[in-house]
Length: 579
Image 1 (cartoon, rainbow, N blue to C red):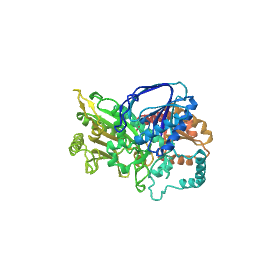
Image 2 (image 1 turned 90 degrees about the horizontal axis):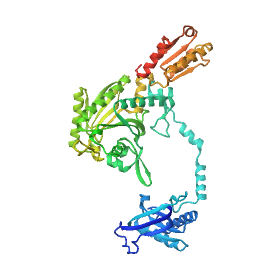
Image 3 (image 1 turned 120 degrees about the vertical axis):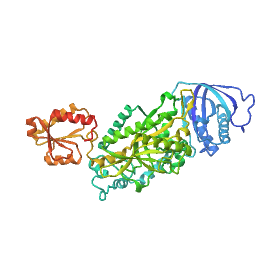
Image 4 (image 1 turned 180 degrees about the vertical axis):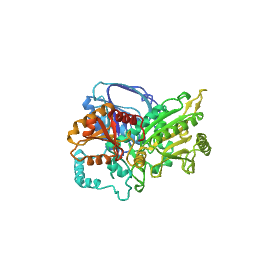
């Protein structure tokens, strides 16, 4: 049971008409407006879990008496209020609870008014100004006492062996015996980028260094979005199953979704971002002047995977997509597809990737008519051919709501990875009744493009690490420069160089190693972390005022003036060059 108690200067109510046909008709006297001064109004929703009428009534009366004593009220209004819960009991049960509560309270020196059950009513009130004037409560029958609860909790706690549990969650170690030396999981551990643990299978624990890469990629995409006219949104990760039924995921994709409950209702952890984006679109009216509308979201999603299918960053349960949805008119469609292809090419160019293109057509499990699918597939095919892009046909591998263009990038080992995608969707705007007002003031349905460039950020980072063998472009490297001293007498000058570089290039990720280890050992440590630039300061550099720089694992040392090196570094980072 849920109640909302309102201590009022006055509380007035009047029945209007029957809401439940089976309810007995009120007399003319009962239909009159009731006016109660200095009232404690108890808005009440009896729920399915309130199965025992007698115990439910006793619990309700106990709570009312407690509140009435606190606020010094003798006039009680019992008011049925279904809006407090979505798990309501039967009308007969609720009516009986309120009726018996009135009888018992009336026998205990309270004046009690009971608003009629099963009628539409209007009420008017003036709340008092003290802190107890408005209180909400959830009342549960047959709960254990506080003392019994504490005893049960103590027994349960005694069963827990923290040390044993800690051993269990700490024992999983990465087996590197069957992995190539440039496997992203080995590089991730070596460079302190990320880790995995069985307490969250298929989910990444990002360390500071790895999070730098993750955030730099997001910032790059944000800049591309800004320059291409995108808005950014953020939607919840757990959503009511009604939404997933509308979108079609509940019937077509449910086995891949994590399900949960709240207030005895079914919810799902989102496997995709698009349904949330539909609700954002519907929040305000749209006209043809608002289109094309490009909306981006860096959305974290969860998808059920068999444990045997998990593979580091490449195949994860939790991952983040650089998702976006474009709402447009049919005559704008081709240009919007070209705009997405432009973004794909810019991103792949930054990673020095080659790629191939596939056109994926209708799958067996799908929503929407064949006529819509014909139209959507033809639109994507025409766009690719007009753009002059070679593509392969991938029959039956489209999304359940529409065909798609997939971009498979090729890494340094010749492997291909599907990352970017453009999906054309006529069905979901129809299911969510999206519309806009056209030039003639008529309602039209927008066309929708789902698109991602990185795809999964986790997968993209994994591919990038293996493609570069961990030697990331300077703008992405967690640590961009490391300064080493040759001997202790060079330490002060090395510190000066470090500080000058920080002043010259704000936010430069630069570190130092002025330990007593040999230069060879310090270089090796920097190499393991794949630091793009290692500056070694010795007597010669200090005397000549220049820098000895080891570049990206080359054994050859290059000499730079401070100004030349700092300018080179600054441009490389600013322009996000692939070096």
